[in-house]
Length: 99
Figure 1 (cartoon, rainbow, N blue to C red):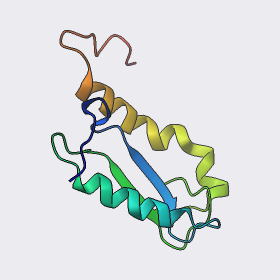
Figure 2 (figure 1 turned 135 degrees about the vertical axis):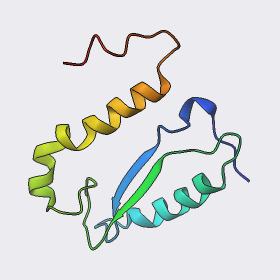
Figure 3 (figure 1 turned 135 degrees about the horizontal axis):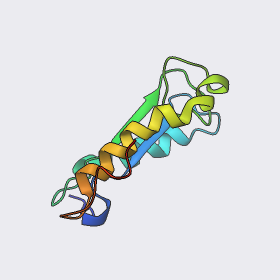
């Protein structure tokens, strides 16, 4: 079994094209196996493969990369805000920065 660092729990998010031009998806399969085997704590992130997607696939299965990279802010900010709220220190102001 692998062992994850507590500081990384919930913070590892990997997006790769299932048909990566440089075959990087092969390494991601191995990384995913390692991450899924971690305990105490479990890694708690995500690994997503873009079906038939090439190198630099960014996690949006509904659009080609040329278009989806134009909306990273709307694609990832909700995930980032959720992570901040889940991991904020006790007593942190979680409302003053949200408009």
